[in-house]
Image (spheres, one colour):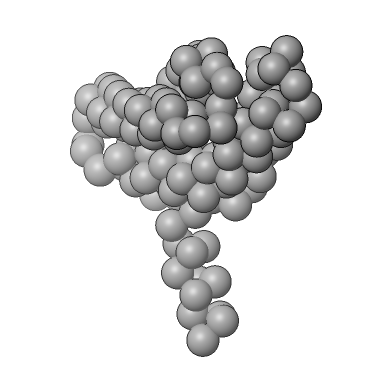
Length: 136
């Protein structure tokens, strides 16, 4: 049963991206909220890291799927980046709007700035890898 759960999660979460994102964004959010004290900053950072690990890992995998869904590369990339960015920014703001984050808007800013270019690179990479696999 544990193997089945792990397999299912692995199909829907990009673990490497989730770990990198959780560490990076958790640290940034801690730094942005540090003026409110260590405890509120740590709460905001933990919320961000946990959210990023689970939700952003799923969004990255979904971004790759959307990038491969259509035959037209430009349309695929635009759809993948737009949907993924809106999900990431909206859900991040929602998480930080819940009690415990002193600066919800400021804590959402890193996702809004890093997300779209990151999703574009990941979507482009997914299309490129798929093209290389087909050519081989």
